[in-house]
Length: 168
Image (tube, rainbow, N blue to C red; front, side, top):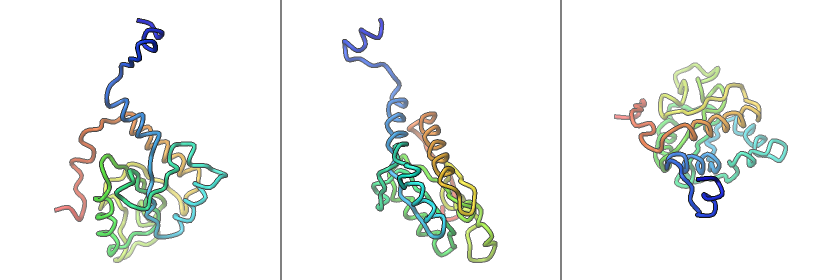
């Protein structure tokens, strides 16, 4: 059976995971959870110079129920942690998280009693972006990393075993 027969008979053979993952990886709908200077740098990543839309991540969402990619940019205090967890829980599966910048990834230089030392204590993180603040190219690299993880993964059992600080 050659390619001509596949096209003529309108038949494509693939795994369901591969089909869904192809669509999901090329149509990410990010939601920015920006609390500090990294959120300003994110604006540069979506500007015309860097054009995040060419990677399928141009439809910004401001409701967690419409987003499948959360980008946490900036310092997260212990007071904000339950809010971040609630917003993450409102997102539909499958969902992905990027921790953007030193503060979201490790608390940054805020090593004190009020600052969460990394959002991965509260929600699962799929990609980390280093820097203070990170460059727009690093944001694009993280999007490409997420796309590779989506293509290689399965649509079943994402983050099933994750237990964060706020989980019972």
